[in-house]
Length: 184
Ligand SMILES: [Cu+2]
Ligand SMILES: [Zn+2]
Image (cartoon, rainbow, N blue to C red; front, top):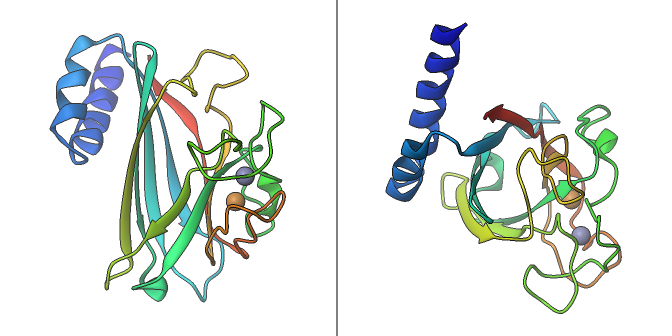
């Protein structure tokens, strides 16, 4: 039991540390909460993968997202947290954007936005892209309405216009993952 918990921690440590030194040092505290999701392609014609990690550090949550969709090289794709941790039916099981504050869809940090509105990710010429976000608007493993655990992460085929309600007109869903608590 102890051994498996420890090895899990080491694996996650490596995963998180690959995103940067700040995440590595914060793991040393031992009491941090981490949630993560592995993102898989929903359509065989548009292969891809990704990882998202949420690390709670005091009142702040640090999010690191990394995606790799070769067919979308040199393009921009929208990524949101959706309300259900359900990737069935090509990601449509995740339903709409996670919106516990009953806000309008918008751009993160704007006057109004969903708590799931991570936004657009620019992919490089290999189809890889990364986003880092620090916020006190989310929590990890608290069971509160702003807890990211149990939600879905969706990668879209198109760009979020930040205006169209309630979706941002971001197109179909090409990637999906379920956010789960990784360790306490
Ligand atoms: Cu979405
Ligand atoms: Zn939204």
